[in-house]
Length: 122
Image (tube, rainbow, N blue to C red; front, side, top):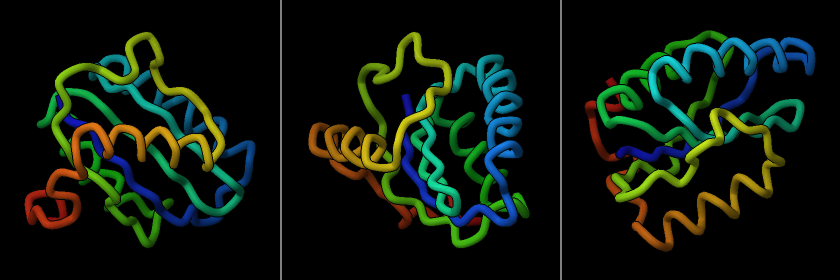
């Protein structure tokens, strides 16, 4: 199971548009078996995604190309033994909560290859 954490700048995304984006993403991600958490502070999005490695990597590539994001930074990319988000779907959290959760997962598993993998950055 792959776990990634990234942050990006949300381009022209107001709170209503963010809620709509998350609602649509929840539906798509549920079908793909992707779980995680997302935070938005009015400018910065921080998200943890978790699911099958190939599916998560493909989604991250899509996010990097999405014009609603800029300055996408991969903070961690690691394979984990167990789901950290069973039953979560895609939950909203504050940026601080996402940071603390990601830090706890990194402490347990390490930060993996984070942004060093060219397959992610293509």
